[in-house]
Image (cartoon, rainbow, N blue to C red; front, side, top):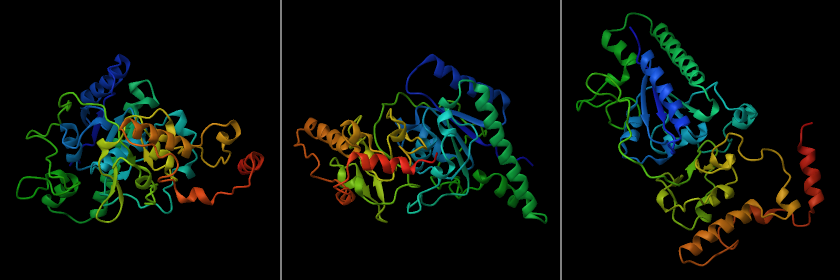
Length: 357
């Protein structure tokens, strides 16, 4: 008896660049012809609203999920999470050159991180479409993941033992068919959306009309320590807390387009702006400058990250007709404890000592 097929969702680029569109269409076409996975296309993941057909479809998928997008995998993963689409992190072997250079120790969750909540027992794989130029590379990785999922299903059958009833077997192999009295799935993420139409086929195109480009922060809870520095710094009402006193992005549309100031303030680099041009802010796994302690801004007279964040915030405050506040509001107290009598040479020597030659 065959298990359910893994679902592949291709999140399209914001632009209509013919090369990008060609890659998306090539991957989708080959997957459809192969017929071994379910495949759908949605608009750019970052731009989808919670009620967009593409997002509703993503919420409806009960099992393992592969999402290909023009974003860093970490950004995609936490965009999904903020929309209630969560799962265990699936490890992809298809990485960009930049990701391959990242030390595995840097990928470990922060010891003090609050982590995601209510993570279901399934895997979500997020793959950056910028990692390769050829569809064959992505098709090969999707096949590898699908084969791995099939092996896990076989191992599960071996574990069951005995002779399960047909309805029990269906519950393991096809959890999306385990419905409640209203005909809606009771497994998966509990969002109440049916994962397929009556004939079992996934829709290939879930564009749902044009979408507007958006700009808002995404929190990586595998790094976030709930320090609340972002909510203290942001003066536009973007952040809030939930019933468990956990930080969240409450009013994302209050965020000022192009302003990543709160990301610069975060001590754990847990705030992602997927559309930013700086990799560390856009969700790259490298997470900034790593263990290099040299503050080049001091050596060359450029503003520090904190000063730049304050400048960016002031720009948006003035644009809103409000007074600039500079470094007087919301600056983390940890900045006050920094040594005051160190000079540039001390910083440089300490940075060199930390390097592993």
